[in-house]
Image (tube, rainbow, N blue to C red; front, side, top):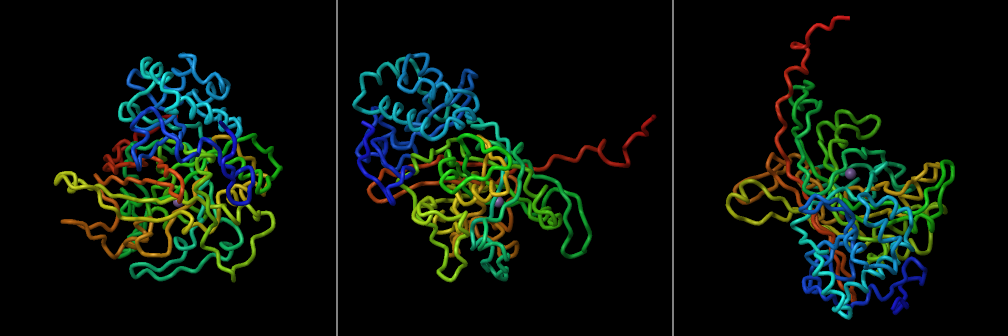
Length: 465
Ligand code: MN
């Protein structure tokens, strides 16, 4: 157990595959062996959940169940990786993330052994003690205290492509030289299922030219992938190498960077602010970098004629396997569809390695190149992962451009309407490997409540000093 059965790509430590990836491996939990299931024994993603009895703690998804790590420890299991299991059982995973990828790897090996069909006798103990909760009975929580959230712009096609009558936009001068990003809002990152209350903001009416303050007229989603940072923080003033950055990628989530386009476009001088800070939703399970090792690929997008990578954003590993081979899908569920019993409509299908011009390691290295300290639990968003073909457009801004309505049975959409639910999913697939999924990243748009009359100038009472 634990010996490498295959070494991928350049043979570097980061790409090493081991027994936890073995495609023949099965679990004693039948639901984990169903072909196409998100959480086979080769995945073992980490999250934090609230159980039906109100307990909050770290868990691992397997098949259709959540394995509650606190209870597994109480039952005397996972002793081979006790320190790691204790950290991963906490109500936030920051300390576990800080322990780094070798620690996550030790726990992954212990979890794989515990859940392996070869250990069916221990399985009886596990099921007897009620350590496994059905996924639908637990509520996902944020997996970390997120100190900082940075969102990037890694897709060339999202940046430039003409779609639906929208003119091609010029690529910013810096785009081919560095991953462009902005500091977004960490406090409004929420787990899947959290409602999105339509935000109010200021925009300019295209017809009248008047500036309004009202519920956004152009609610949008952005299909992205997020990465949680782990490992020992770099001190302020100390950059990191590409190799260090790669080792600090703890694990990945699907991310919806909800965007209010009218607010964003009117305010946009210093970069996005209220148009983006309103809410960001992430999928509940962090798929570890080790679980994603079989699904690495080069960033396909870069052309021979593009400027060379700057040396500090270049590495052999990154050229060969910097990106994730990850199939992404956005579905839209409307009130009418639900009333008529119809399934959500697929509105975008894209592949990360065919959309991303820059890799996560390059984003992180660039982020730290100014001497910015990156801490465990920090979150980085890839940016909208639109590819070149039309069906890969990964935001309403590109699907409709606000002018060419998306046709659905019995209704149309320019932007998201109240009652709409956006469901994002991700699925990693590669020849010779068991595919793994991320679970859903979903959120429903709720109407903006009335603006409190006490918060308008007309009703403000005189303040006595
Ligand atoms: Mn974004």
